[in-house]
Image (cartoon, rainbow, N blue to C red; front, top):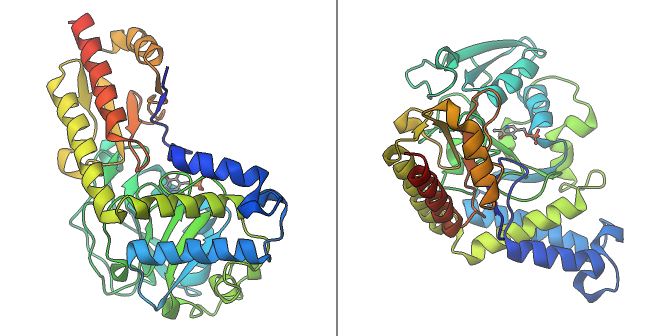
Length: 356
Ligand SMILES: *Cc1c(COP(=O)(O)O)cnc(C)c1O
């Protein structure tokens, strides 16, 4: 039976990418060597890194005055590197608290200086995105989380601000068009929408760096990584390679604009079904709903065991919700096809027929 993978992360990758990358494990570029056993300074790998960076630049139309870095440590290390590199000594940053990941980012920033919580959705268990908040002019930067992977909410639009804007795009980067110039720093762990775990993408505006007066340890200093073109030390070779292939796959599909259209269709179809089907209800406030992570509940919790056994028997994988939300979460990232969404909808309808 075909398994439909709705995992929140690490998550589904395109079949073509899995095939191509598995070949490189045995014989990379017909060199007779595995990509896992060659130098990161070799011509073949430098070409991979250069291509990965070029694809990021092309797919997101990254302006020239931004660095594109492939780092390690996941989004979680960025929670630390961001204040280290951007918060002045005795400085202040503003964080929008929209759930688990933004809380974790905020917690690290507090170790470097004052953190202003711009607004929080905690009062309603993060089922919405706060909108009417004031951004004080004296902040070193503000921090946003574009898509809240756990709660299934997403910021729908962005604009340039008077202070630098930092955004965690771990779970929706490359899923929709963004204007990079609205941001000063964008970061994403690869393992949701870009590739496998192990690589972290950072896109940072050059002129916001080097201004804090802090003595930053080399490894945590963006300028060190930028100067070394993401080769300050051994980079995450294989994760970067698979990310590069995934970005190439996206380009071949027509790029971000084309995938955004499909992502919108997928999300619309699934939310419509969840609204129509009386056995289910959605979690997030309608206008803030995520197009990547669709959170939903059973209307009657007594059906939990029956439903869980049912979807598992149908080849649906990993739709259990995060413990902070409960219920279910279908992650419908770029690599998850519209066919898989239509199949999930069929499964929900079949369950409805059997239980009403
Ligand atoms: C998964 C996730 C993280 C954590 O990423 P790591 O790479 O595991 O550190 C951070 N932010 C968001 C929005 C996420 O979805």
